[in-house]
Image (cartoon, rainbow, N blue to C red; front, top):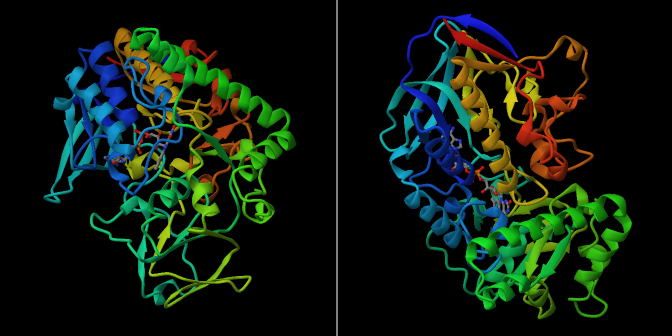
Length: 498
Ligand SMILES: Cc1cc2nc3c(=O)[nH]c(=O)nc-3n(C[C@H](O)[C@H](O)[C@H](O)COP(=O)(O)OP(=O)(O)OC[C@H]3O[C@@H](n4cnc5c(N)ncnc54)[C@H](O)[C@@H]3O)c2cc1C
């Protein structure tokens, strides 16, 4: 740990948190409970808290991992393991109320730009009110970015040929219209992931027909929406706090076992998942075309089907699968490369997200614009060239919150260390031995390669070959390192006001 001296004045805030989703609410919880002397504000672009679980309102929207681990370690989840957005939003609301966090949240506020002054040792931040469009300025010592990983402004819609000619209704699930009557409509849903898999069974009954158009198939895991162990513990009258902790530990262990099989026996794991799907479909169904992915299970999230609902809808003929590239849109629908014509009154593009790099904030340091793509991440948390900025990036192989909480504890410890030393800034700085280090993608594509990461990899900060400069995708390894990570490993430079 190196120390430098600088002269500073006092900023308005010690910490500005960006975003009031699962990560930002946890950051506020940490600040309130662990660092009560720090002044902080949570700026949130939407009109309320919840992030993902506020904005997604499409039929069937629910968690894909159980909420014992998507929820927080300190607040028991007492419902069915997989829950709808409204239930998760209510759970987050209870956390906010129980810990009196609401007063620190400022809604309808987008953090647009942040300018660091080395002389002042703080950020000057521009915040735009989305209702009045007015821009105000605040100053903050530290920016804690809990903006998630995808941009909320709009979902990802590929620019297909002829799209502008399509005369029907085009919808992205991220912006589901408040009043949409799909009864007796012919509907095409484009996409193959968790959104498609939860949306389609929820609308299949009311539509005249639903056609799923996917470029390539995905993997699905099928289960009931219950946890027998949790049920049994409840029957035994065990305290909910205990049940929560036990089911969390079980979920983490089960996922470790599944991930290990996926990595060590990719063909076996592939075959097992495909058989699980085939068993749910009628004899002779073309599983090879529609449910045999080209990638291995460990490379992308495996989506979960509850109680076989998607497969039932396919089996009873209300949902048809088309696996092919889209050649062009037409005024009445679309045509695939193989010549399949799909006419649809409504086309739903369940085609994913655009990655958000540090909340889209335009950063400058001492007057120089920062291109975040040129920076190198310290453990997926801090970034070279961006003093006093941290990003809470969650887990990808198990619930996001498992890593988000771990990272938030690290950031809390970092802030506490700074407070203890009277440090006014911390910067990730490559050590002499890192000088020639080869750059790697932030998310290693050999480990995990969902579409949003492939599309936006070039815009993301980079990793390096040394462990200190990587976003570790292996939670089970990281959990043995990150909680006690040494701030004196030479990668962090602390500056103290004189
Ligand atoms: C439909 C859907 C289902 C999912 N299901 C699961 C699941 O089952 N399990 C799982 O682990 N993960 C799931 N995820 C991933 C999910 O996003 C994370 O689990 C988690 O909700 C992320 O929380 P977050 O707070 O980090 O980010 P988000 O929920 O994305 O919230 C970020 C917040 O930051 C705000 N923000 C961003 N930039 C700015 C800015 N510049 N200024 C002000 N505010 C800003 C946004 O408005 C938003 O409210 C799902 C995602 C989607 C879309």
